[in-house]
Length: 394
Ligand SMILES: Cc1cc2nc3c(=O)[nH]c(=O)nc-3n(C[C@H](O)[C@H](O)[C@H](O)COP(=O)(O)OP(=O)(O)OC[C@H]3O[C@@H](n4cnc5c(N)ncnc54)[C@H](O)[C@@H]3O)c2cc1C
Image (cartoon, rainbow, N blue to C red; front, side, top):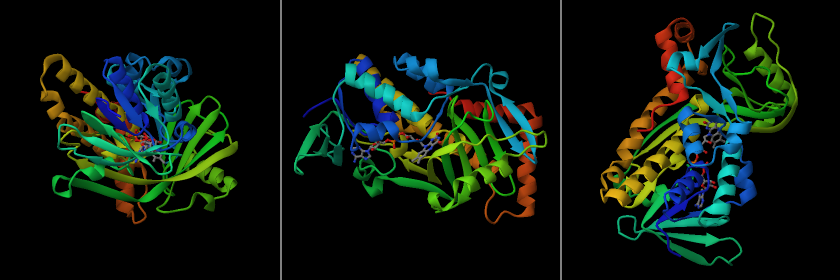
């Protein structure tokens, strides 16, 4: 099998890249180790930055998002039982975000790819990327049900969109790699519940017992999170215990109340930052979680993945149109500038809102002072609003 761009992974990064290349008349093949149902149901992100929304629309993948997504013009910060709204359009000159689940973005892109795009092979597991430093890199892969027989995808370029646990990153020799990491001593217990959200915008709450987030997937489905100790098992909390704890951490002094409903899913997400530099080795490019992870507090993971593949697609189109590889050569540097802004923003949001197990009373006071500053200073509020609605793509 042969193609121009071999894409490993059909998460948001791989699927969107295939769409962007198809629109530009460049052929690609997507290899995805899981089946279609699994990819379409994997619960993860749900906040699309303004730039991501614009990219999906321009790619012809924004129709259902515009009909069913929920435009949000702000978030609420809660601390010391007070509530403060951060108004995005007022602080940023018009930007907002869209609540539209990652599962739905993937479903839309898969449907388009199958209808109009190049091959998208499910249950096709990439085993290794070979010859990344040569003119003809290859992906060795295995398809389900072929008695373990291996195939080879020959490409001009390989883009590793295979997430944090993928194989693409491993093809970069250790002497060419540098890894920057931070693990937080807590995780997020996330639930999906069949109940209309108790507030019409996301609520980020700082509490002495730990962080809580009220979020949503649709007008009838709530997504809520609790800060829990690192490594905790999702099953160790009963449903009513989760609701009790959410109620405690989200409580306000003005009588706001939390609606409860049937919990349909529970999972624990670790909190970590990870950046692999560079994001390119020869003709192998890394995009999305394959290259970097952020803690979910800033809602940046999916949006960074979109930024990477837009940068790659634009650079390849530039090469085809002008013969200049300048943008492709600058891929890693261009992406990393944005990645580090997102890492910084996610770090700020995480340390602003979570309570470390060893937090001192001094640190508690500083945290509250930082929150009060955002609530009362236009400059501090603008910094948060600009970071949340997203950093420019170029
Ligand atoms: C549990 C969890 C919860 C999250 N919650 C949030 C959130 O609330 N907010 C937020 O902003 N972000 C969240 N994120 C982050 C966000 O979902 C990711 O940043 C986003 O999915 C990145 O997209 P991606 O396409 O780069 O990688 P992924 O979505 O991980 O996609 C990678 C794809 O590659 C496939 N793959 C892996 N290995 C191979 C192989 N060898 N061969 C072929 N295919 C392979 C995988 O099956 C997968 O489909 C969460 C992440 C996780 C893991």
